[in-house]
Amino acid sequence: MNLESKIKLLPKDILSVIKKAGSLADSMDVHAYLVGGFVRDMLLRRPNLDLDIVIEARHREVEQARHREVGQAHHSEGVQMDGILFAEKLAEVLGARLIKHKRFGTAVLTLPNHKKIDIATARKETYARPGALPVVSGGSIYDDLLRRDFSINAMAVTISKHNFGKLSDYFSGIADLKRKRIRVLHSLSFADDPTRMLRAIRFGERYGFSLERKTLQLFKAARKEDALNKVTKHRLRDELILMLKEDRPLKVISSIRKLYGFSFIDTGIRLSGVKLDFLRKLNKAVMIFRKHHPKKRVLDSWLIFLIGLLDGLDLEAVKKICADFAFARGDTKRIVSYFDSHSEVIKRLSEKNIRPSSVYHLLEPLSFEVIVLIMAKQNKSDIIKKINEYLFVHNGIRLAVDGSDLKELGFVPGPHFKEMLVKALYAKIDKVVKDKNEEIKFIKEHGSRHIKT
Ligand code: ATP
Image 1 (cartoon, rainbow, N blue to C red):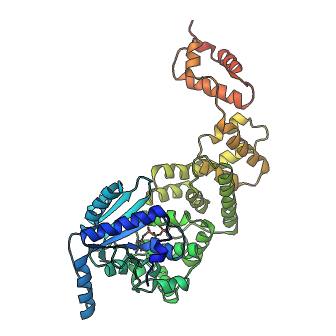
Image 2 (image 1 turned 90 degrees about the vertical axis):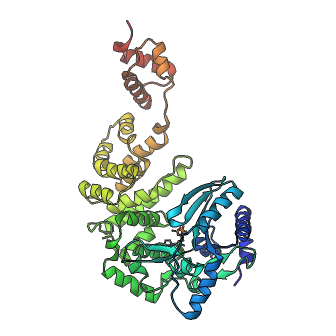
Image 3 (image 1 turned 45 degrees about the vertical axis):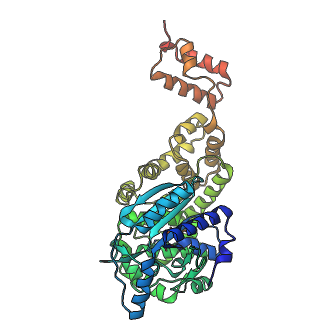
């Protein structure tokens, strides 16, 4: 099969990069292929901007043919430099930034328009034991595709001039795309790398595909062995984040429940009716927030759903999960702050006569993610009203005066400046002061002890 006509339909800037990469490969006498998710999505006509290129030295092709002829496995060791050399030259041609990972024979280019290109040397992987990281050696494109997770992710398209667009589909990926199924390439796949179970759930949900019969059997067998337990937590964390970043996280969560359960995160997680209801509310709250805050900081919705899943665990258990999975410091802070504060914040927000400035004081230290969680956590319309007022009105209020005004008024500079300005801000939020003159008057009255004599 040849995909030249499909490639030509890609956005112009991507097509141009592909052509340049192909010509460069020809001039360096190596084979270049588009691989992985890019090929899959091109066949599904879904936009995918992450180019993934594999470079194969020409002699590998000859070796591969010979090994196939004599029907034996292909063991070729060697330094995997072809991809790195190619990446260095392509970076020059495209004016891209280059990060090399020599040990793995891989590189990442960042184009001036910030798009990324992954470049790798074709490689072969063997697993010493289940869940361990693989031993990597140089290989042919066939070897490189054989090490991949699913048939739909294991296709390659030649981009060198000769054979431009030729599809290599050794594992019937096209047939599986048509039949809408996720299929592993061999029966040890989940044992070799159990994170593929999470990837299977993710792609299955994203594309509406199901696990092929044998793959499902293998999945269930690996589940029985609690295969995910053998994987380092930080790899699970990365896959979990990707899963929760999918467009329909609730569906992903349902699939996890159906196919594996949540024991790989914590055995205490239960998806009760109440929890499901909470997650649905979260989904709604995220959508509303996004709609009304188009220009504000992007919401890390994956973190919201993760906290939603963990909700109900005690603070110590949550802290342990954060440490074991080594969540980034900022993520841990946001996760812990929800468990630490949400009950108290909700209690305070339900006080009838709470002043707007007190609402501000309560919510201002919290991230938007935690605020969205608090909104969804309870049903009271007056609390939601107070939170919305904070988000849409008070959160943006600024004073007209600043430190230099205070100096001009004769105040001695010091840490109390901040305190005075915060007091004035709260007064403004509570509509005690309206304009600059009133702010100045308020500050003079309340800060008289700091004034120069
Ligand atoms: P996405 O659209 O989510 O980015 P992707 O297919 O591009 O999906 P990546 O995680 O970027 O996914 O991986 C790129 C390719 O590397 C995959 O298409 C697959 O061929 C291969 N791959 C990634 N992770 C694994 C794994 N754990 N085992 C085997 N192959 C993998």
